[in-house]
Length: 274
Length: 355
Image 1 (cartoon, each protein chain N blue to C red):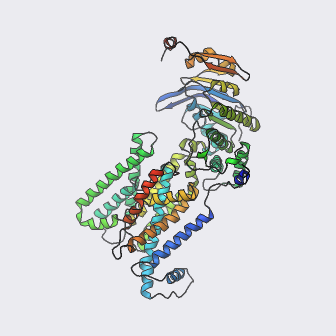
Image 2: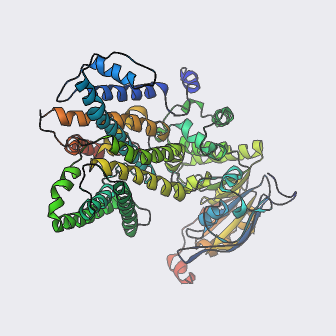
Image 3: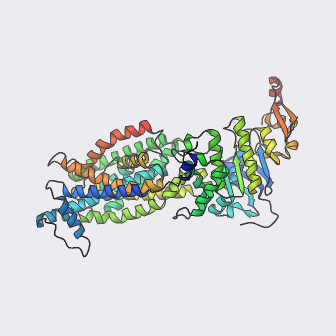
């Protein structure tokens, strides 16, 4: 199931999404190479999550989204689920469902509609649980786990899909700073070990910059900056699109962004609202 | 923490455990035997078992029952018990399927207005049609199904009018409104045709009493179709518990699965209603009890609902015809007596009750 050699893992061009008639994503183009980590950032309402959902094939869109050269709307739903796995921003936690069963849901595209899970499916679940140190939780109910543990289980379900592409919508927004780092390190390790391609959206700009190979800054549904974290996370870019005064400090793994309190009147006069 | 590795090896996918399957089959057999043996004329249980074995081709044993007793058993009790089993299985299965399809623990054929719609359909046929026999005309299940689908569509649309995401509360409110409207239409019909009042009312309160083999044959095809469709989707119902967006990302077509399940469940409900009248709460009591005992996975919930629903209704019917002596209590009254308090229990614990 691989397309023409050399085609990017994900190639988006002219992506436009309207929800209830409102233009949310406006002519967005981006490429993600195989094995690359690209993070989409942008203020609230910029269209990050919507763009990600469109790439996951979950929304009707105009434009073109290709997976290894194949338009994703030509893939059968089940084949798409084998190629692209999505972890939503706050996944539904089914009441009383066990961790093992939840991770097994990731095998859904491999289980024939009227069939049952095979030994291979169970082996994948066991392998993923071990890889994510979730063995002690396998027999627990998902709704009894803490936020950090749940996020690992959500990732495990996505990994069980066996997809080469991982879409992460705000993977750390519900976590404290320690668990944020733990989850992002885990994703980075898995990406290296399994050759995964990661396309994520994030709010925490410093963390986003530390882990991403490249970043895309969206504002008002459009791409306003793209490039390495150092090129995108500039004081000028962030001041213009987030309307915030920031200090960007050179860090070990990328720029560190710190918001500093600005002069309120200056901010208001500066914000030329549309 | 030392015990953890042992625990972890035991984690296996939720599914139908053999012990639960055996318990369900046993419950059906016990309910069947009790339903056949007890009644206005009491039959010896051993003789009943032997007569049942005699129904198997090639088996010929002496049951010690008189010809009159055998006639009571085979012509009166057996069709009634079998119909009770079928109706109970359908109502419980439909309830569980609605709860999964709507992702709502309170969804039930009655709360969604489905039963009222089927009731209106049946009333219309009885009132307007030429039917005066005690048997159920073949047109009745069709009318019941049309009414049921109309009702569930109305509830669905009305529930969506309030909120985009069809919250449980909005859906239940819509179901109440649709039920009230359809019941009013039914009352109006009855008002205009007082001569059928008696016939419609005895049917409305839930009657398995007049059941014969004809009724069983009328609903059997519907029950089989519903059972096959719903049971085939038990894994998809488990996937749907994570919500539509994620189910879609896992390769499902959530809306299509949902519509198919709702139509199948409505077909089963309509078939049950068309022979047995309005028997409430079975679709709530049975699936929720199973969830609490055997876990929330639809892979075990649906088959167990069929078995325990069947056993439950056969026993409720037995209670209805024995508790008050010669005067039969309508079965709908029995299930409501049991169901109403149970409903409150579900509401009170609905945060911990899995859906």
